[in-house]
Length: 187
Image (cartoon, rainbow, N blue to C red; front, side, top):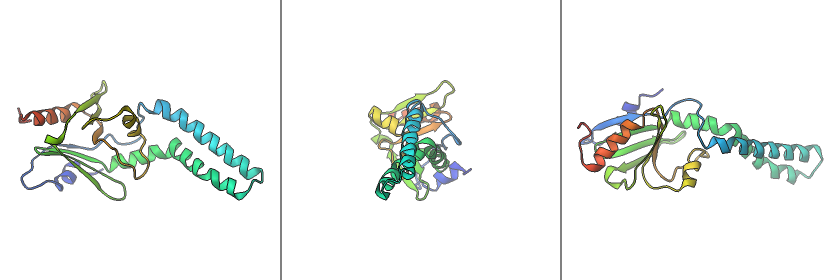
């Protein structure tokens, strides 16, 4: 486990003050979109594996066997690989809120940095569970983007920046809201 404060502190400008930092929840997570994605992935993966088995055992041309391989790999990723990828990505994701901007660092092989100035946030949404955990979306998004953000493929990036899978979504939301209104978060 990394020290999120020191990782975010390395990104700060001289005149910036870190107000909050965290990492997303760690380990295996299920999302609401999995109610659809798990059955779909089992159907996709099951059919593609069945197809590939039939092609290989039926002496079909090599081209047919090669044609089915990408579908098998996509199916295996959707069934199991996406959970592993999501856990590794969350392990290497860091969030920070300063008095000037929001910092989102992520990436498995290469570091991806997103910086959102507080004044550039046009819309702020909080999705909070009963236990206080949740996500904060920093902008407008279509409903399809919300579901797609729960199953990213390697190398894919979210279109709308977000602080997701937080253990306590209320605290950073309040800080951002106060900064947007020009109120000191200490008040």
